[in-house]
Image (cartoon, rainbow, N blue to C red; front, top):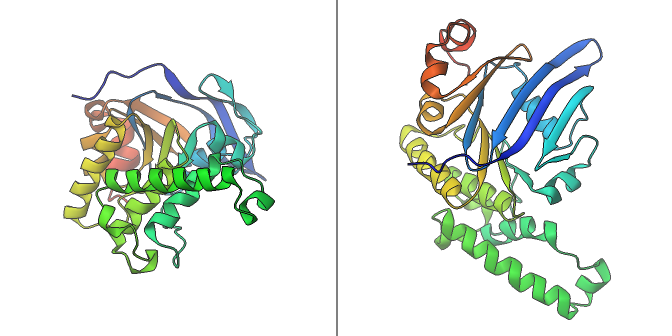
Length: 261
């Protein structure tokens, strides 16, 4: 049984995002409660990735309010949002190909390190301590991902599914309260998708809150506690999976047609 949702962690209120004369998001209300796996679905161009971008500080919304953990994050820079406790993965994996799996995850841990550049160059005690901590934390997260044996392998040589796991581990290394997963099942075969479902539940059960964008409806309906649906930049439905599957607006806008991958 999933844990009961806790207090509201992320809330978007009437968020609008315009690019010139195009409205990518129109007065979107959305929330994520602590401890849940929330899903965000809709056709291509519905505004899903724009939601992630306004939450993480890539874009600043034209109007509306975004609160994370009770505080406004509108106008914050990307690194400030990361430090506040929001981490993100991308549909297209963005690992450092010539670094090992362990080193890639350690990059995430660096987000909370305070050593100056001279301190790192001189390898002062604080830098050495942070490096040890980052290495240990990276090893723990690769264990959580089920790939501790990949730690010293170069990222470019990892199987695709393990590259995705390293990317998730790197995001978790920033010590987030909220993990945003953008199309985590992209490119996966059915067996890999089942394994991914188990992994996402394991991550949530380890104390993280998750909001995911995903086109694979089997995965979404199987793991999400609650789902929000966007169409043409506006939220048209929200509810538990059974409610979404039965909603006429969602069927007409999305589920009733072949989903775009």
